[in-house]
Length: 315
Image (tube, rainbow, N blue to C red):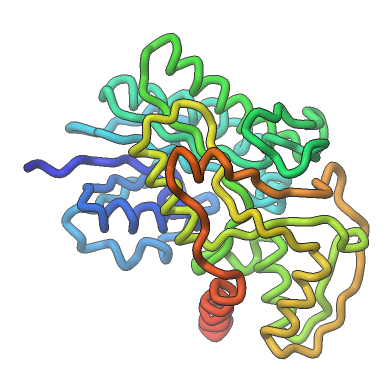
């Protein structure tokens, strides 16, 4: 039987590369498309030489030509951390709008199922806690984070429009904070920032008073949830994330303890529109996908720390 083919945009990124691994392990052929703006060939280096894997360097805001049959298009291309989308605001807006349009066009042309990587950022600074998929969000469209939040909200809107108007099979995953190997040490998010500071013996920088909460999902759990969603019949957005909530201050203390670091916590000004709480309601994922996270944070952090140590040794 002929293997099915999946196109993964942003496939050389943190999540995209793990997704490529998963799809290949499930006996699919994978075409990875990435312009390497925030992706890295090191993330997919182990896949070169696999006859079922192909890499195309391309900016998905431009027309995508992929020869042959395509069964799935998974759109993961986008800067995804504040440090990236604040530095690359126009590119972030373009990949969320033009890039999603082009990826949907490819799915339409190939009669393929489309999966959009959306984000918990669509909820903004939420007034409902935890956040269910039915919550419409509290987003500042003209704030500095609006370039990412609104790009993803538009991406969801055009995905639903293609589903309703063109009859394309679409899936939307709202991804909550995820961590694991292949995160960039300089990506600006709490975990890599804290870990790199702790391992280098620097003070750990916490924004605000550290009382804001996050919930961290290990990457293998997230990818499992996404794959289940891809194969499901659910047409509306589904939250995938770990509902175990922790304050940023507690998280910084945990990293110091795990790294056996002498780092101290210092506090700086909270960035504009930084969410005060973030916790997924995963009732829908449990019910429809039979999914919930399995990896304990202590276990996931240990694997991630080992990865970061190796990266620091390389540098």
